[in-house]
Amino acid sequence: MKKLVEIKDVCKIYNPGENEVRALNHVNLTIGENEFVAIIGQSGSGKSTLMNMIGCLDIPTSGKYYLHGKDVSHMSDDEQSDIRNEEIGFIFQGFNLIQSLTAMENVELPLIYRGIGKRERDRLAEVALNSVGLEKRKNHRPNEMSGGQQQRVAIARAIAQAPPILLADEPTGNLDSSSSKEIIKIIKRLYREGRTVIVITHDSGIAKQAKRIITISDGEIQSDIINPDYKED
Amino acid sequence: MGTIGEYIKSAIASIKNNKGRSFLTMLGIIIGIAAVLTILVIGDGLKAEASGQMSSLETTTIDISIDLSKTDKCFTPANMDAIEQSMNCIYGLSPQITLYGTGKGRKATYSIYLTGGSDVLSHSGSNKILYGRYFTRDDVEASNNVCVISETAAINLFGYVNAIGETIEITSEDMTSEFTVVGVRENTSLDKSYATQVDDKPVLTGDIPYTAAAQAYNYDVNSLFTDVKAYLHEDNKDIAMSKMKSVVENVTGLRGEDAVKVTASYGMDESTKNILSVVTIVIALIASISLIVGGIGVMNIMIVSVTERTREIGIRKSLGARTSSILVQFLAEAAILTFTGGVFGIVLGLFFAKMLCTGIGFTFIVNPILVIIVVGISISVGLFFGIYPANRASKLNPIDALRSE
Image 1 (cartoon, rainbow over the protein chains, first blue to last red):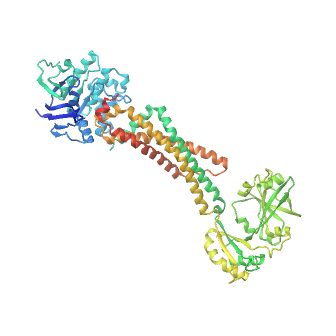
Image 2: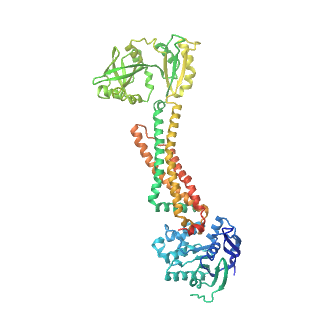
């Protein structure tokens, strides 16, 4: 299995000095292609910092991070932007759709930053919206949709430019149970289609859906197990 | 970057999303641009007005004077004739003598200001003959009591414009003489400035042969004139200037006595135009203060917009927007805001300028380059005052931006 995410001895320290906070303390983690990983931890455990690190939103204080074999631990803002655009599809707890744009326009955003032309963008966005079952909602704005639908738009946006990694931060945190099931189902399907899916959550119910479960607390990885209860739906 | 079009589109969308606020922000720019443009257009009109008469006919004059402290010779009909014979590059010479008094027509009596000169006075202004003719060299030589009066004078004295053949009785101090109207000409700027001169009544104007004016006062035309003007086409100015002094000295017999002075006069000349330009620019600069205030308004609203949309900026960055993408998006938003304001401002400014020009009586001239410059200014105001907020937006840290509400 090829290594996709390779985190080596990474520390992230806020407020260096007397009141320093070690959000990540010598973390080592490797995630290969086409894995379905849940990272579970309580709030303050460092899981958000780890997600920011994996998602190239943040850089480590020390240690190395190789993404797709490339050292991304000391990149400039713009280089990080390019990496995020090419490698990572984000799915957030609060959906993070732009309210003034339609579903279609939201899905097209990463494609615009990739520099893809209008016609190809439209095609890719429609494919992505179809795959989450929202072809009839493409011209709706976020406030005209339910939470579950909004999260599906966000998923379409995350997969539109076909990044190897899907990074989902509490993807069902703002949803009722039936919408949650639906979203989990879509996420599992995306994994089966060959993507690497990383879900960050504090909810063990969600974490149990994943094939590999990594537990983090106090900035350190406590356990990293293959989920014996994993079901292929 | 073919994606600039996309940034502009999203900038327009965000302006549309806040129509009321965008309009209020634009208002500052609209007023500023309208004020600047109005002043510049009126300034152009003023310049055109001021430089109007002489330059429009391309006629210019040369002043020739004899210094009385050095000689007792002066210009006479005979020596003026001789000078004209030797100088075929000029239309002719004319002395000037004014006859001022009351003029009595068939309908009413008014103060009247008659300019006595030779027939070449007809070259002096842009005032065209409406009816009849200008007086001729024959009228001058025969001291005929004929006159060419302005349109206003004809209407006031006789009640109608085509007053050819009518008689005006001119009284000045203890002399009275009668002049026959042979021509009616358009009003000149003199008529405009004399419009309400005496007791709210106009002072009327007209032209008469200088010989007739001298005769009315009982003056001798052979010992009256130390100054004359040569009227000529602008193109002949250099050649006339080079010959004039020696010709006059030869004809008058004043060679070597340093008594003849020749000065070229300029119609409404370059220095006057320059002063008007400076005045216009200074006023326009004062007006542009409102543009700066408008620009600060744009900056203010852009800062608000950036703050409100911090989360959106975070989302865009997480999806791969570079610093420059965010910068361009917000700069485009500011520039489109001021450009739109500028377009409205131009429409408003031209409207005001048109009204004012019509009111004052200036010609309404719109220089297309001026409009292009004003459009450029409005865009630059947006770019300049957009830099700070856009830069602030583009430098936001995506993690913090995503966390904000």
